[in-house]
Image (cartoon, rainbow, N blue to C red; front, top):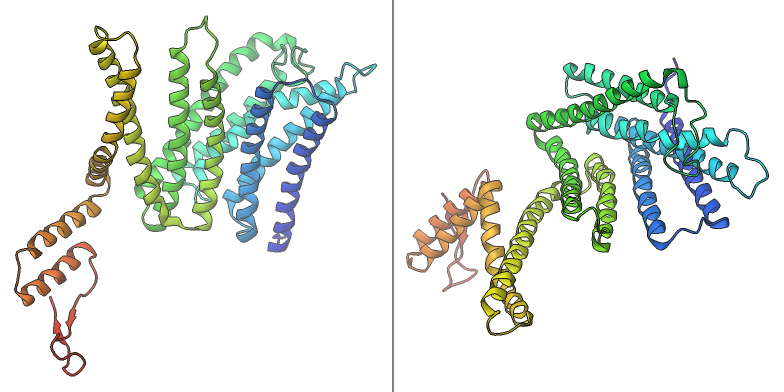
Length: 424
């Protein structure tokens, strides 16, 4: 079998990208020429979904331009192709099932069916193989080969089961129509198989994420930094979704969802774009070691935000209870709580920063303590030789160089006397 050259791979990657771009553009043009009367909220939801979809094939294109044989880049491009196929089916169904037409186009319901079930291969590639092969395009070890094979079989079987299970389509222009490929005679068996496959699908994703954790524990150096990028992006996405789900359960079923919570849901989904962005940074190694700063700031300011919000709500509640005999309005309690939280910001940030450094960045914490100790001793030391030796020793403990020396020039006769060298 002839091996493709880098130039041919570049052309193939460009073809995959343009297929996705044209498919999405076609769907957008159809919506513009014949708008379905959607409100602003649904249009914003569609825009967020489009941004997330664009992020994956665009990330794959950026990787393949520099590394045309990178398996992770091809996976991202493949995810874009799969979503592009769904967009083509959705566009054809929207045009063919238009009620203003005298009769629907042939195969329009098939297009709607393709768009309804395309989530299985798209999420399957993202949640299994992308995690298993990141960042070098290889499995963590040979022991993970059965997981990869099982994931591929489950994704393919689940996709087939979705297209053969009878019933009504639930999304898109074909919503409410019967599945044109559904086999009514197999309906009871297919429903049981579908439930089992969805459970197996979730287990495959969990196993793939476990493989990423195992790889991270064994990784060192550059690979560990690459895995940190993906883990940080996934942590942001997971935290946002957990918070959104918890907040939605706090809203009673008989009340409409607050507008702020709907906006937060859209922002949570938009965070999915962080995953391909983190993969691009990790694979191309652009500012790779900045991830430690990102993690540090996220831990500090995330904890600080939670602390200040809890302090604000608690102080408002307590002050309202305390001031209720004096005033019926809560403006005084809100104002006092705001001032208290503003005054608490600086001290809380410093304490949280120290706690984060002590727990997660022990070397930085020990270095800061060493420098602080040297500064305290410097106020009481007057012997220049002792100060020089202490300075060299402090630099060795904090920066840990291979060697350290201190050169001093006499102040009395500068430029005429040979410098004096103090070594550790």
